[in-house]
Image (tube, rainbow, N blue to C red; front, side, top):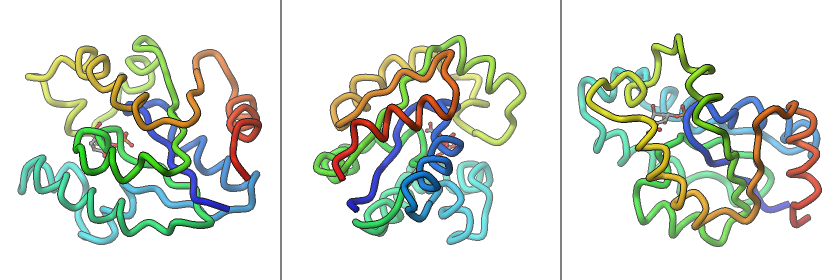
Amino acid sequence: MESIYLVGFMGSGKSTIGKQLAKKLNLLYIDMDEQIEQTTKKQIKTIFAEEGEQAFRDIEHKILTETPKQGYVVSTGGGIIERKENRQWLLNKQVVYLNTSWDTIKNRLAHDQSRPIWQDQSKDKQLLMQSRDPKYREIAKIIVNTDQRSIDQIVAEINLHLHK
Ligand code: S3P
């Protein structure tokens, strides 16, 4: 089966859903953020602090294009759609957009310390989420609203709409 790519804002549940979806479909699972940390042997926040966002985006792009075309569920990072070449690369893939409300995201990430973009006080995160929404939609084959729904319900809905 063609690999499935989960996209969506930070805190939309890409990792949690990705793992469960992979289990249900009997596919392997890759978390791109983890892959980046393993490859660079650095935490994402350290890469941002030491090398800056653009260096992180370069690594992210490389890791994305190296993901296997078949047999995997891939959880991407929330900013994967920021680069046009990533959107182009994802355009003909099975992309699932986990669409989550701002209130849910804000509550889930209230105590998060690991995400440099979330920690960046100079950035309006709600505005960032709004500006990213059309970019997720541009590449998504399936859009799932995740608010007030269980992991099982979300996984079942994705499963229903997948090309197998
Ligand atoms: C980012 C989201 C993060 C991670 C990095 C940048 C972003 O991934 O890739 O901190 O720009 O939104 P998650 O969406 O898994 O938090």
